[in-house]
Image: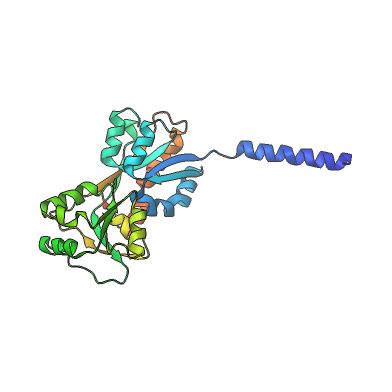
Length: 253
Protein backbone atom coordinates (compact mmCIF):
# COMPACT_ATOMS: atom_id res chain seq x y z
CA UNK A 1 0.00 0.00 0.00
CA UNK A 2 1.36 3.46 -0.91
CA UNK A 3 1.80 6.16 1.66
CA UNK A 4 -1.05 8.15 0.05
CA UNK A 5 -3.52 5.22 0.05
CA UNK A 6 -2.57 4.34 3.62
CA UNK A 7 -3.26 7.92 4.66
CA UNK A 8 -6.61 7.89 2.85
CA UNK A 9 -7.61 4.64 4.54
CA UNK A 10 -6.66 6.01 7.94
CA UNK A 11 -8.59 9.21 7.28
CA UNK A 12 -11.64 7.20 6.23
CA UNK A 13 -11.45 5.17 9.44
CA UNK A 14 -11.27 8.35 11.51
CA UNK A 15 -14.27 9.89 9.72
CA UNK A 16 -16.28 6.67 10.14
CA UNK A 17 -15.40 6.47 13.82
CA UNK A 18 -16.34 10.08 14.44
CA UNK A 19 -19.61 9.62 12.57
CA UNK A 20 -20.48 6.57 14.61
CA UNK A 21 -19.60 8.36 17.83
CA UNK A 22 -21.80 11.33 16.90
CA UNK A 23 -24.80 9.25 15.77
CA UNK A 24 -27.52 9.64 18.42
CA UNK A 25 -28.52 6.50 20.23
CA UNK A 26 -32.14 5.41 19.77
CA UNK A 27 -34.86 5.96 22.34
CA UNK A 28 -36.17 2.53 23.31
CA UNK A 29 -39.97 2.39 23.23
CA UNK A 30 -42.20 -0.44 24.50
CA UNK A 31 -45.75 -0.07 23.19
CA UNK A 32 -49.04 -1.91 23.28
CA UNK A 33 -50.31 -3.67 20.16
CA UNK A 34 -53.44 -1.58 20.61
CA UNK A 35 -51.66 1.54 19.36
CA UNK A 36 -49.26 -0.15 16.93
CA UNK A 37 -50.91 0.95 13.67
CA UNK A 38 -51.00 4.62 14.61
CA UNK A 39 -47.55 4.68 16.23
CA UNK A 40 -45.94 3.02 13.21
CA UNK A 41 -47.36 5.83 11.05
CA UNK A 42 -46.14 8.46 13.52
CA UNK A 43 -42.59 7.18 14.01
CA UNK A 44 -41.01 9.47 11.35
CA UNK A 45 -42.77 12.51 12.85
CA UNK A 46 -41.83 11.41 16.37
CA UNK A 47 -38.18 11.11 15.38
CA UNK A 48 -38.19 14.56 13.80
CA UNK A 49 -39.88 16.07 16.86
CA UNK A 50 -37.48 14.43 19.30
CA UNK A 51 -34.35 14.59 17.16
CA UNK A 52 -33.52 10.97 17.97
CA UNK A 53 -34.27 7.62 16.30
CA UNK A 54 -36.78 5.32 17.97
CA UNK A 55 -36.35 1.59 18.58
CA UNK A 56 -39.92 0.34 19.08
CA UNK A 57 -41.08 -3.04 20.34
CA UNK A 58 -44.77 -3.96 20.39
CA UNK A 59 -46.65 -6.52 22.47
CA UNK A 60 -49.72 -6.93 24.63
CA UNK A 61 -49.84 -4.59 27.61
CA UNK A 62 -49.62 -7.66 29.86
CA UNK A 63 -46.49 -9.01 28.16
CA UNK A 64 -44.77 -5.63 28.17
CA UNK A 65 -45.64 -5.19 31.84
CA UNK A 66 -43.76 -8.41 32.56
CA UNK A 67 -40.73 -7.14 30.62
CA UNK A 68 -40.70 -3.90 32.62
CA UNK A 69 -41.12 -5.74 35.90
CA UNK A 70 -38.14 -7.91 34.89
CA UNK A 71 -36.09 -4.70 34.52
CA UNK A 72 -35.71 -4.87 30.74
CA UNK A 73 -34.14 -1.54 29.71
CA UNK A 74 -36.38 1.02 27.99
CA UNK A 75 -37.05 4.75 28.02
CA UNK A 76 -40.68 5.35 27.06
CA UNK A 77 -43.85 3.28 26.99
CA UNK A 78 -47.50 3.51 25.95
CA UNK A 79 -49.76 0.93 27.58
CA UNK A 80 -53.30 0.51 28.86
CA UNK A 81 -53.80 3.07 31.63
CA UNK A 82 -54.44 0.50 34.36
CA UNK A 83 -51.13 -1.18 33.53
CA UNK A 84 -49.33 2.18 33.60
CA UNK A 85 -50.84 2.85 37.03
CA UNK A 86 -49.70 -0.54 38.31
CA UNK A 87 -46.15 0.10 37.11
CA UNK A 88 -46.13 3.55 38.74
CA UNK A 89 -47.17 1.97 42.03
CA UNK A 90 -44.40 -0.59 41.63
CA UNK A 91 -41.86 2.19 41.18
CA UNK A 92 -41.02 1.27 37.58
CA UNK A 93 -42.44 4.40 35.93
CA UNK A 94 -42.16 8.06 36.85
CA UNK A 95 -45.45 9.33 38.29
CA UNK A 96 -45.05 12.84 36.84
CA UNK A 97 -44.88 11.70 33.20
CA UNK A 98 -48.20 9.82 32.99
CA UNK A 99 -50.42 11.37 30.33
CA UNK A 100 -53.59 9.90 28.83
CA UNK A 101 -53.65 9.85 25.03
CA UNK A 102 -56.81 8.27 23.64
CA UNK A 103 -59.19 5.37 24.15
CA UNK A 104 -60.58 2.55 22.01
CA UNK A 105 -63.74 0.55 22.41
CA UNK A 106 -64.08 -3.18 21.71
CA UNK A 107 -65.52 -4.27 18.39
CA UNK A 108 -66.26 -7.22 16.14
CA UNK A 109 -64.17 -7.75 13.02
CA UNK A 110 -65.07 -9.85 9.98
CA UNK A 111 -63.33 -10.64 6.70
CA UNK A 112 -63.60 -7.76 4.28
CA UNK A 113 -66.56 -8.30 1.98
CA UNK A 114 -68.35 -10.76 4.27
CA UNK A 115 -71.96 -10.10 5.29
CA UNK A 116 -72.11 -7.90 8.36
CA UNK A 117 -73.83 -9.56 11.32
CA UNK A 118 -76.41 -7.67 13.38
CA UNK A 119 -74.67 -6.89 16.66
CA UNK A 120 -76.57 -3.74 17.58
CA UNK A 121 -78.73 -5.44 20.21
CA UNK A 122 -78.07 -7.97 22.96
CA UNK A 123 -80.08 -10.65 21.16
CA UNK A 124 -78.35 -9.85 17.87
CA UNK A 125 -74.94 -10.13 19.50
CA UNK A 126 -75.93 -13.41 21.16
CA UNK A 127 -77.16 -14.99 17.92
CA UNK A 128 -74.07 -13.77 16.05
CA UNK A 129 -71.80 -15.55 18.51
CA UNK A 130 -73.94 -18.69 18.60
CA UNK A 131 -74.08 -18.84 14.79
CA UNK A 132 -70.35 -18.27 14.29
CA UNK A 133 -68.26 -21.17 13.09
CA UNK A 134 -65.25 -19.95 15.05
CA UNK A 135 -64.59 -16.93 17.28
CA UNK A 136 -61.09 -15.68 17.99
CA UNK A 137 -59.47 -13.13 20.27
CA UNK A 138 -56.18 -12.60 22.07
CA UNK A 139 -55.84 -14.43 25.36
CA UNK A 140 -54.04 -11.51 27.04
CA UNK A 141 -55.56 -8.70 24.99
CA UNK A 142 -56.69 -5.53 26.74
CA UNK A 143 -60.21 -6.25 25.45
CA UNK A 144 -60.39 -9.65 27.19
CA UNK A 145 -62.24 -8.47 30.37
CA UNK A 146 -65.07 -6.92 28.29
CA UNK A 147 -65.32 -10.07 26.11
CA UNK A 148 -65.43 -12.40 29.11
CA UNK A 149 -68.12 -10.30 30.78
CA UNK A 150 -70.23 -10.23 27.62
CA UNK A 151 -70.10 -14.01 27.16
CA UNK A 152 -70.86 -14.52 30.83
CA UNK A 153 -73.80 -12.09 30.81
CA UNK A 154 -75.24 -13.67 27.64
CA UNK A 155 -75.01 -17.08 29.36
CA UNK A 156 -73.36 -18.71 26.35
CA UNK A 157 -69.96 -19.65 27.78
CA UNK A 158 -70.51 -23.39 27.37
CA UNK A 159 -72.03 -22.97 23.90
CA UNK A 160 -69.07 -21.03 22.46
CA UNK A 161 -66.22 -22.65 24.38
CA UNK A 162 -65.45 -25.34 21.82
CA UNK A 163 -65.47 -22.90 18.91
CA UNK A 164 -63.34 -20.19 20.48
CA UNK A 165 -59.68 -19.85 19.45
CA UNK A 166 -57.57 -17.96 21.97
CA UNK A 167 -54.33 -16.62 20.53
CA UNK A 168 -51.13 -15.04 21.83
CA UNK A 169 -51.78 -11.82 19.92
CA UNK A 170 -54.38 -10.07 17.78
CA UNK A 171 -52.04 -10.61 14.80
CA UNK A 172 -52.58 -14.35 15.18
CA UNK A 173 -56.34 -13.84 15.50
CA UNK A 174 -56.33 -11.73 12.34
CA UNK A 175 -54.39 -14.46 10.56
CA UNK A 176 -57.10 -16.98 11.50
CA UNK A 177 -59.71 -14.57 10.15
CA UNK A 178 -57.73 -13.99 6.96
CA UNK A 179 -57.38 -17.74 6.32
CA UNK A 180 -61.04 -18.42 6.97
CA UNK A 181 -60.30 -20.47 10.10
CA UNK A 182 -62.37 -17.95 12.09
CA UNK A 183 -65.26 -15.82 10.92
CA UNK A 184 -65.29 -13.38 13.84
CA UNK A 185 -62.50 -11.62 15.71
CA UNK A 186 -63.24 -9.60 18.84
CA UNK A 187 -60.67 -7.02 19.84
CA UNK A 188 -60.07 -3.29 20.18
CA UNK A 189 -61.58 -1.29 17.33
CA UNK A 190 -58.15 0.31 16.88
CA UNK A 191 -56.76 -3.13 16.02
CA UNK A 192 -59.49 -3.85 13.43
CA UNK A 193 -59.75 -0.58 11.50
CA UNK A 194 -56.15 -0.57 10.11
CA UNK A 195 -56.24 -4.21 8.85
CA UNK A 196 -56.82 -4.20 5.09
CA UNK A 197 -58.26 -7.73 4.94
CA UNK A 198 -60.67 -7.12 7.82
CA UNK A 199 -63.71 -4.95 8.29
CA UNK A 200 -65.32 -3.54 11.41
CA UNK A 201 -68.80 -5.05 11.79
CA UNK A 202 -69.41 -2.65 14.65
CA UNK A 203 -68.75 -2.00 18.33
CA UNK A 204 -70.06 -4.23 21.07
CA UNK A 205 -73.56 -3.27 22.28
CA UNK A 206 -73.37 -0.40 24.80
CA UNK A 207 -74.14 -2.60 27.82
CA UNK A 208 -71.12 -4.78 26.99
CA UNK A 209 -68.76 -2.08 25.80
CA UNK A 210 -65.48 -1.66 27.60
CA UNK A 211 -63.11 1.15 26.70
CA UNK A 212 -59.37 0.86 27.03
CA UNK A 213 -57.51 4.13 27.56
CA UNK A 214 -53.82 4.34 26.68
CA UNK A 215 -51.32 6.41 28.63
CA UNK A 216 -47.64 7.27 28.52
CA UNK A 217 -44.93 6.30 30.95
CA UNK A 218 -41.20 6.98 31.34
CA UNK A 219 -38.78 4.58 32.99
CA UNK A 220 -37.48 5.79 36.34
CA UNK A 221 -33.99 4.69 35.24
CA UNK A 222 -34.08 6.12 31.72
CA UNK A 223 -30.91 7.94 30.73
CA UNK A 224 -32.84 9.91 28.08
CA UNK A 225 -35.63 11.54 30.08
CA UNK A 226 -35.52 14.78 28.07
CA UNK A 227 -36.12 12.90 24.82
CA UNK A 228 -38.78 10.73 26.47
CA UNK A 229 -40.56 13.83 27.77
CA UNK A 230 -40.47 15.27 24.25
CA UNK A 231 -42.19 12.07 23.09
CA UNK A 232 -44.92 12.57 25.70
CA UNK A 233 -45.53 16.09 24.37
CA UNK A 234 -45.69 14.85 20.78
CA UNK A 235 -48.06 11.90 21.27
CA UNK A 236 -50.44 14.09 23.30
CA UNK A 237 -50.33 16.90 20.71
CA UNK A 238 -52.72 17.83 17.87
CA UNK A 239 -50.89 16.03 15.04
CA UNK A 240 -50.94 12.76 16.95
CA UNK A 241 -54.59 13.28 17.93
CA UNK A 242 -55.59 13.38 14.26
CA UNK A 243 -53.63 10.19 13.56
CA UNK A 244 -55.23 8.39 16.51
CA UNK A 245 -58.71 9.37 15.33
CA UNK A 246 -58.01 7.99 11.84
CA UNK A 247 -57.27 4.55 13.35
CA UNK A 248 -60.48 4.23 15.33
CA UNK A 249 -59.55 5.92 18.59
CA UNK A 250 -61.66 8.39 20.56
CA UNK A 251 -60.45 11.23 22.77
CA UNK A 252 -59.90 9.99 26.32
CA UNK A 253 -62.56 10.88 28.88
